[in-house]
Length: 337
Image (cartoon, rainbow, N blue to C red; front, side, top):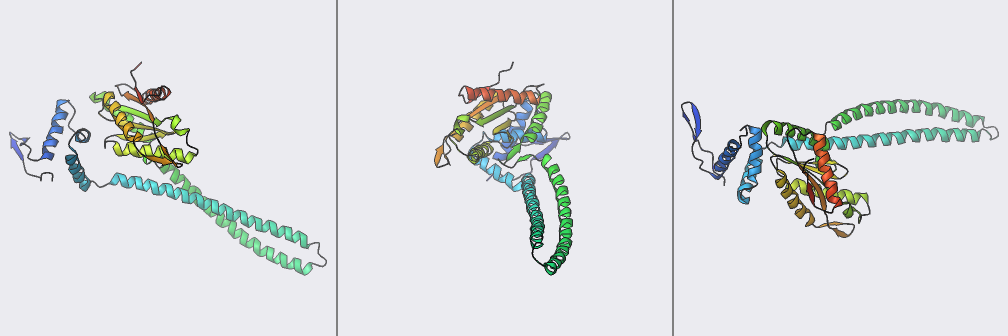
C-alpha cells in the first residue's frame, strides 16, 4: 500500500515548509518537485503533471501500479465520457442517414403505385364497355391522390427534420477530437496540441518531439481487401495507445499515417520510443486472411525547436518517414536544413 496521508506542513516566518517524506509516494512527489526546480520549469499543475507521469515510467512496476490504482479512484473519467458521447452521436448520424434512405424508398414505392395504376387504367380503357369499371378506378384514384398528398406532406416534414439534424451533427463533427475508425485522436486535435506545445517550448525552452509512422507498403501487398488493411492499421493504433505515456498525444493524421507528440522528450528519447514500439508491433501475432502478418513500420522523428511552425514540423517528419521506408529503415531523425 502507498503510505497514508499525514499532516507534515509547518510554517517558519510565514513560509510553508514540508517535513521529510514518510511514504514512497510522498518521496516520489518531492523528487518530481525537485526536478522541476532543477530544470527551472515553473512548478504549476500543468508541468507538475507532465513530469509526474514521465518520471513515473522510470519507477518500479509495483509502485507504478499502486499509483495508477490510486489515481483511478480519484479520476472522474469526464474525458472518456466525452469520447463516448461522440461515438453515440456518430451512431445517430448513421441511423439518421438510414432513415432518409428508407423514407426515400417509401416515396419511390408510392410513385410506383401511381405508375402501375396509370398503366392499368390505360389498359382497361380499351376493354369494351368499361364505364363502370373506369368509374370505380376514378374513385380509387381520388382516394389514392388524397393518401399520396398526405404522404408527400409527411415526407417533406421528415426531410426538413433530417436536414436540421444533419446540420447539427456536422457542426458537432467539425469540432470532434476523436478518430472513430482507430480509436485515437484525429488530425485536427493533434495540430491544436502541437501548436500549443510549440508555444510552450518558445517560452520555457524544454524539448519535445514528434513521431510520425506508418505500416510499410510492402506489408500491405500481401493483403487482398481494404478491410484487412484497416484492421492492420487498427492493430497498430491500439498498440501505440496502449504503450504510450499519459502525457503523449497519439493521433491518426489520415491515410494510415499515425503521429505521436512526445512532450518533454528529445529526439534520442523519441528514437528509443520508436524502437520499443517497433519491437512490440513486430512481435505481435496478428492473423488476417488465414495467415500471420509480420508488421514492419517506417517512422520519421523531429525534435521541436523554438520558432518552428506546425506545417514545417509535420512536413519534415513526414519526409523522414518516407525516406525511411524508401531505404528500408526503421526511422530517420530530422537533422535540420
